Length: 471
Image (cartoon, rainbow, N blue to C red; front, side):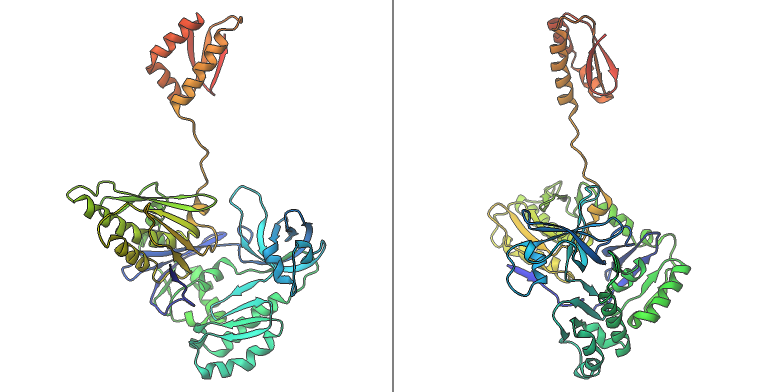
């Protein structure tokens, strides 16, 4: 089983675009060829409380479900399962009631949002973890840890500044802290620890980054320009960088291209391609991505790749291109959880090994842990990528309800018309349906003739909701 678990973002050069907005900012990073590599949405807490910390009240402890339900304030419901609730208890805890009691107040962090429109509770953890550019602060056991990449001199300077803050929680100093003044590192740690130690008198928000701050914390790499669209936003960004994140100070620049930045750099086009039913591959093959509640399925198809190639060559080429496309789209669309890829079956010697090598290369540099199995005898590969939030499809699309086929609807109406026409009631049969269904019925006149014969009634059509009446 292959695994990628980078400790921190690599020291690489990325060009970053930040697009301000109302309620939501967006950012994207570009690879060395100037193509969109990652896409991130930065929401106001009123739209999405993901990663925000709340002071919550336990409203119900359900021992049957082993779940606790909480009030996060402002009408936001929260839910915590037994596994997460056990983080509150040092000893053994077999039931949710061993961990929480109704009326208890505690700090929690939203770790998952329910699907749009379902109205379910936000999944929360009782161990909030605030991640900045230089430090990570977490409620729990007292400890102070430093990245192994930080110089000994920096560690000795930071220890006396950070140790007093780590008395009732954990502070992890990231490798990036070695590139900025120690005062900036201590200030970020103090900001987080002060926020987590707040005890409001009622349920409500304790800490959340603004959309602008989220965009700046998410900036990758140690080099490369960070282009901000819009003069007003640029001034705000520069002020925030001077106050909190000096490592970005020399990288902030104004976007000066033609038109909107996301259109100029092809990000909008990449979004449109990612959401398409078919994602085309250079060879003429294509992949399709289907997300379900349990997992994401990626189907690999030959398309027109066979033209001018042998079957063996075409299969290998399409699978190799699909492997690279899967690695790219899992990252760009931020797809997490279990992913099953249905590759095209190959029989050539060494083909499976080459495909696994291509898949490893596709996941190289992904900022979140990725694991995958080998290829099964059915051509399937299982991938597990750590889930970080809503995927691109979750954010921008909703699941479409199944739509009845025109012929199935027409045949159902014919059954209903036959049944109604053979009752004692008088009148002509009127079949109501949409344009597509009526067109199908008018094309298949033999079925209408049979209906008239069996019911001894005339038949007319009306545009409307599917129905059969007598008039």
